[in-house]
Amino acid sequence: MTFEPLGRSLSDFTVELDVYSGPYEWLLALILKDELEIFEVPLRELVESYLLVRRPGAANGLERDTDFAGSAAALILLKSRTLSPAIDADTEGIEDEPLSAEELAERLTEYLKIRRVAEHLKDRLALNAGHYVSAHTIAPRQGSLRISPDRVSLAARQAFSRLIEPPVRHLGPITVTLQQLAGIIRTAIAGGPISYESLTSDMDRMNRAVAFAAALSLAQEGSLTLTQAEPLGPLTLEPSR
Image 1 (tube, one colour):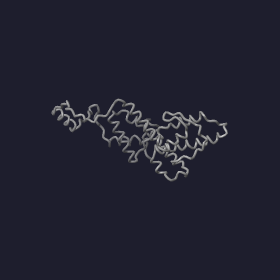
Image 2 (cartoon, helix red, strand yellow; image 1 turned 90 degrees about the horizontal axis):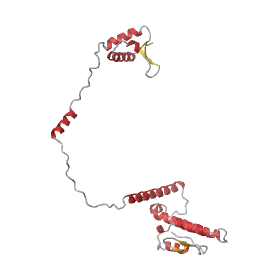
Image 3 (cartoon, helix red, strand yellow; image 1 turned 180 degrees about the horizontal axis):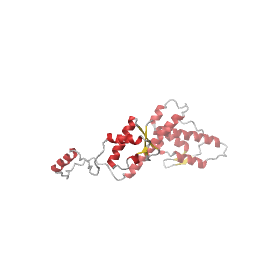
């Protein structure tokens, strides 16, 4: 990583940073000689310092701006390569080639990942401040749970025993068979369409269910057609044509 010669356009530009105070050119020399870590140089403060002393109307203003912009860009590139050496290794030897939109997006994504991980670690460290991991293992303690063998045996019998059949005492006896109800339905629809409600109006719940099963069986045979104008509406039984 090298910097282009600055000439003397920035010879009078001095900076005041926490890690360095003095001429800007000397700061670049210290970085190039590895006597000052790039991580320690706040580039944002560096740019702000230059903007405070920038003289747009000066005779060499454009030259100063150009030299500073070039050197600052080189510092940013150096810092980014140091932060992500893997990306720099992949692009070694092709510095002069322009980066595509996909490559720029990949670099930005890598940077965001590193930054989010750093922020997460910072929050975790702040949250666990004062707490230190111990290398000593905690010996297991004897449990106090006591279960009677009889209770275990009873639970096993209940789990694997036959399920109790549901009560059906509330249901009335079936007094008409499916075949008999099918015959009643055939006789009823011989005179034309009839509603299911009027057909089963004098039946109990059990016989209504059997009548519905008989109607479905006849519809499956093609002896009748079930029609319903709307969901949950009246059900009409019609002879098939």
